[in-house]
Image: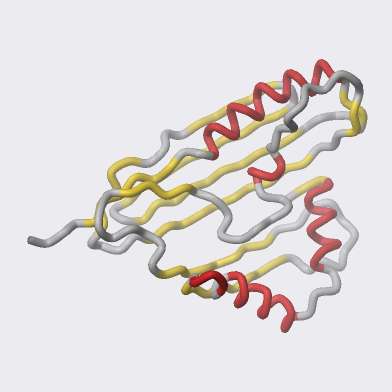
Length: 193
């Protein structure tokens, strides 16, 4: 992360104890019938700088439908303020006046390991979208039953006050990005007869 999203993440993690972090991860992956676990590695959040990196490794069981073909969205396994989906949200109303804005960047890398008894039928195509100080790229690499997804979003808005015209042009780009974020992995269980 970089920019305001990194600053906010550092601030949020600055006073969280190791025990509280472990309990948070445990609760996220065991609530609502979920069967999973996770671990986290992150930069030291104490320095007052505008970059922050972290990795969450997780394993979750019984996620895929086993009776028929299905689709699966690619999204963070837990709620994150600085996820690409959150950074690219579009408000319901068109801007008619200048608004406060800021730059930000986020990168998400997912590695999905599907059971051998599943066949991956389709993955989204690679995508690059750029314009109005915004850039987004997504790549999907499938090798056997392992899919590596890499997504990066960067907002290089150079000012803290954005005109309504800039916000409208960014809205078009953000809507394209959001459509791409809704793509799915299509899979099918291999049923032995």
